[in-house]
Image 1 (cartoon, rainbow, N blue to C red):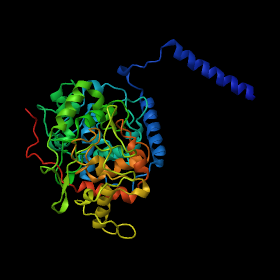
Image 2 (image 1 turned 180 degrees about the horizontal axis):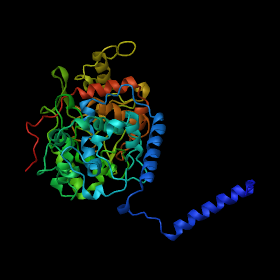
Image 3 (image 1 turned 60 degrees about the vertical axis):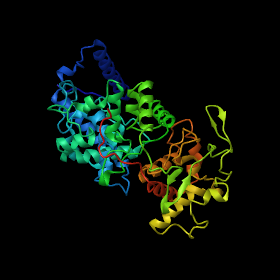
Length: 452
């Protein structure tokens, strides 16, 4: 017997409707197992994995890897190690860190990354770290605007398979080894209980107890210098991270981990750490010159008067164009009034341009003298302005670029830098970043140990 079936659009739509109704009916009954204890059927597990791999491969084609990026840079690897310990290791484990039995019962179960990173390209790893994966427990990066942080995490993932237990502990946990097996994420040293001493240890895994940043040799300038920064600035910065007003996948999670009292204690502690090699009346600069200490507070760079806590302060010794006022103000700067024609052709010329911007600014471009707000002598100045001397070159350059792009954020005073950064050329950013990175750094403690 032969059946003759004629398909029409009405029949096709009817069949589709029946199929959808059937699916809804099955879902409504609640008989579909969603229990992690039962796992997936093999074919379902294969299909989901196959779909995920295809999606990552296709969508990562839009990822552009920076040309100057070196994923083997030791500084880049160290920069993201601490975040891996608290953000990744609790699920994925690490050298010397076992996965929790609880995590192993997740469906899908997070893989140990030492065994998996080689299966993905750099661009694919970037896509996964930045975007996460739905229905897998893999979160997206907390700060979507910070591709630089995501690439740093990719650099660490590339190094992960070759790390020994001791190397991982040194990079990610401040060198501390816990009992016979490191705890996932280093909870013992990660301060998940909010106690100030443990919170300080959490900070020190990256910034050191001295606030100068961990790392030596090629990794010496991995982290920004927070030692001796004004306590109000440090606290306001931590609060900005905590409230999402400043973007950083590295800093937002720890800043939200602690309450206001702990953040205040951390800010106070690091503000009291030694900073620059200060002379009695000022800060040492090249050629033996000494910058005189300021007797009056510095004004807001975009106005002629400053306010702190609602009070109007005295006028600045910086004029409307951002140039330091008076012949005596530049006597210690020794900066030539005219730079060479054209862009700097050498490192020395780049540093000279940076020095001139720091002390004189560039009036026609509405770029004030950096030192008018960011010198290292806080007396009488705005306590919400950080000093810049000795900060890593990459850090200063990157954050000026973030301000240019409107993605920096920060304290209530951060907006002052928006227009200034937009008025700067890439060359000027490179110059001033290089110059400040060469300024005397804070005294380094011989041993970076937990304060008693």
